[in-house]
Length: 282
Image (tube, rainbow, N blue to C red; front, side, top):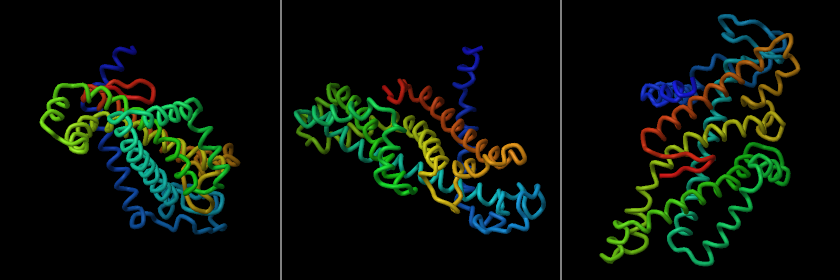
């Protein structure tokens, strides 16, 4: 059965289907201000805990707020800030990892020992510690996650650069008189883009779960702003009478993380990239 599942995951249709679902979700987040039926933070106690209707397609929560509107605006937080975390961490890791691997020396030794020290601890534990120092809030969560996540990219890029710089085409470029910057820009970076694509699809899913987990704990986005993890936290008091308050955001988190992981698996097979833990190899 496991072999059959792996064969199905390698099917390019999986990548196409997951890409379409993710594209639709991103499109919904962009169009949220125009397609959301109500203000996501507007309280109407006279309409609290109402079942689905024409005006409220998914019903209302304990404060009479439209669940559908809050899910749409919550997607903007989850997808938007997860993408921001990925892009920021990637930029820092690409710069430091590439220079560390290509130039080497004492700076490479110090940076890699620092990265190994950070990676010795669970990511969420370090993020929780930093958020405890910075204080609760979405901006603080994003900053804490970027400060922790870039080390994984730096270590990954360093390993790939160490492998690439020993290859013949790099030696030929060096002999022809190309500067270090031109070699990095024209030969190193283009060859690490496939692993970056795989890493990105996987890490955005992790970032979404981390943002939701921290918001569930009350450390992320603060009320009344909508976010999927915060919505699950608010709905846990009504798990017996109105389980949909937790079910809807939970299913969306499951769906989007699953789609990112399926896309990542398909890309890794397509591009010939091996994934080991949170690292990728050419």
